View 1 (spheres, rainbow, N blue to C red):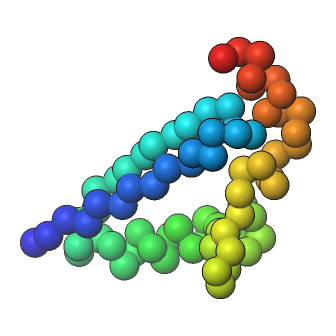
View 2: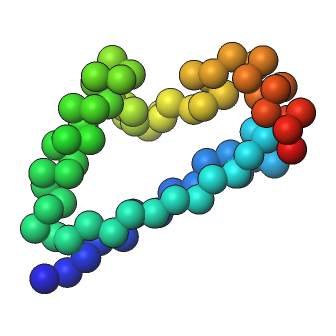
Length: 76
């Protein structure tokens, strides 16, 4: 049995994003296929498309209004 570690960062542009997030999840190899299928279903359910389609991925600054980022900066 092996374990896969998925790690991703968000908001690392040091410009418009008020917060930086680093997250990871460890998944056993036997559960990997089912997890990927469920994540694909969730992407369609919540975004109406795959999160990363081709070479581009959806970005928070395109999903959220600019006002959300302005309010977040006030609390920093």
